[in-house]
Image 1: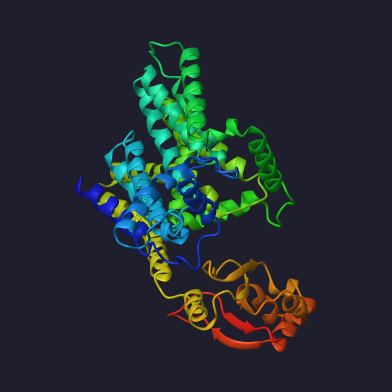
Image 2: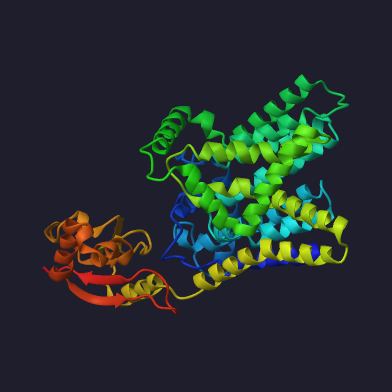
Length: 492
């Protein structure tokens, strides 16, 4: 238990470290889609999210968390009414929910891996605790870490239902799959796990009854957690169709199946990735040979089906892999422990050394990367420097146009974010009353570094820089990471 407590403690530390970084000036790309809708529910009483890119479960959970956050703010004198509470005040608490679910996922991985044995469970939990991709995404109020928690919970409950097949356990496993799907649509494949559990021997129920219970529990949990899927059916169907069309857009230059393989390698490091593949192959052999095929199938079928599904989509983000990583952690741990035991049959003296090397190789790269990430986001970024400068030097009410979403301004400014400033000429900004521009090297940097690669874009930016007055420039350094930001005044 001491080892497990240390692993859980390390997981929590990595996920809660610098949790408020970037609030309120540099939020995660999709965080406002969750948090601001949750705050709107709190302020309006309208539980229809009017947004169907995600199902509504995590929005509702954040709305519940926003209630004690508001009460705490009122008690501490931060505001006197709901209307005066800014949405940005709710982000840190919202992120804390994600961090807690991310930490709890490590424990679920441990519980799932105990179906093999205790050493496998501890190694799997350690791999999951330091996994850089999971650590990073646990810092943001997005759906990927919560859905990973619910997928891991579905796995655990499905293992339980297969071992002790009764109606209640099938209800719980099916409901967990439904809640996962109510958090993110692509978790629909989680239902394969409770359905696999229906193959358990010596059931009092028939297999058909067990399948019916799983499907009914999954559907009921989904509709309870995302009720406006039916209550606002036309808008749900429209939103879902737009979402599917976006994911089936033009193919990227590199095949997504290759890109996700690279993301997976980066997510866990080469040693753990190799161990995960070895565990997958070992599992396939065990399914073919038996016995205990269901345990191995429950560890393999979902991540394989899920990976093949996201690899067909044309929008690729590393965080989309997260629901599969608990399985990678367990399969990698299975392979490491199996290799250590194989060595022990040949040399008892070498076995502890080999085990330590394999475990260290699987954990150390991820731990180093995760620590580097936490240290990096804890620094003062150029976006924070620019934000503070604007609040001090740019009058409230000024119209400001900002490249990218790396810098967000508070409500007191008439600000908007655009993909690239060069999309409009300087005269157009002047004509619409824009007083300030904020240019980011994330956008203009490639053109200035290599003018010949796109002469037109280079010329557009040079006209903007020559035609405006540069008031401040924030250049990245070791102490201040981020993009170079230039604050430009538009002449009248």
